[in-house]
Length: 467
Image (tube, rainbow, N blue to C red; front, side, top):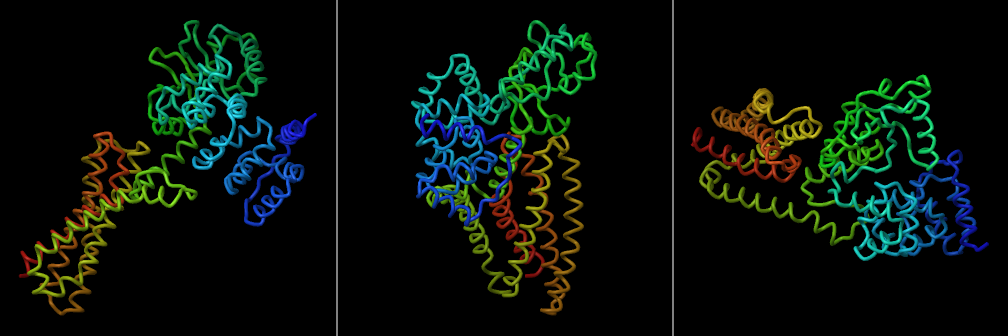
């Protein structure tokens, strides 16, 4: 038996679930791994990798250079390598897929469930993807090609096609037999779906319920109503449905209500992480996904567009200041309070927009509730603005001993806080109405808008009430 075969056999055999343990990747461990790789100590490395979960092996792979990645993955069986590749981050996966041979890729794709396999094939260059699809079995290739036609952020794009279906006329005994056959293929099984003889979804039954039902009962009598999603539904809506109904998985149906796949909770966790990351990036004014392993130029390209937008916005603020050059020159003290006015307006706007964006994202409020939400935000802004204005008046009067100037800047602060809060709560609704991610409202967008408008309000009050 060849050395490679021995390695594959040992790797596959020693990854028994009962022996899997977790691992914290630190610099000391990475130094040991690199030294073993330099020494070509494959057997010692396999002893380290043998008991690890594929996610921990993926952490190791992500933290070594490309040559070491090749060596580590070369030690693993096709089955374990497939799980490791599916656990890699986007940047690391691109690096790994670049050096794996089409033959190795084909074997890895064959070990993955359909949703993970489709994700991997989608990341391959077109010629390599075509070669892999042309090498695997025809029915598997057809399944992957059907998944690849869906947008990656839709229900169809994250579903797997491995679904256990039983007929409504089947008995519990027959369903148990089908469940056993399904499970022997190494596929995850938590529920089975009940369909009629036309393939229309009728209901579902948790696998655990099979053992408490009489073997002769028909599935039509023991099934439960099923919650399903359409293939073109956005993945974020799918996550909300699974959260709302406390589901472990949800079936995906076509326009005729025929079940074509299912989405499991592990896919939804990935969606939640992805959507949260995307929202945080947009709140911070990033235009793409940035990872710690991204290059300097890639990171710069992601961050620069919104920085330019913020720069343009601050130029507008400078033009506003230029228009009020007279008040600034006549009342030097008015310049002292610009940072306070801007900061309070910006903070109030970000607070209100963050609450509204989150509520829209999780389905707590909808555009139909805009009036009620707008009223609430108005009252909150008024209360907070009054309190902050009182503090500002007390400070300015104590510092400058000018009662009317203190009243002016305090009223300006109240107006700025109210305006910023209302803008922060209204803009996400407007963007959501036009099917634009409301998270775009946060970060540079809200801050820039509030800076320019806030300055207009501030100097407008000074010009109107004080000069």
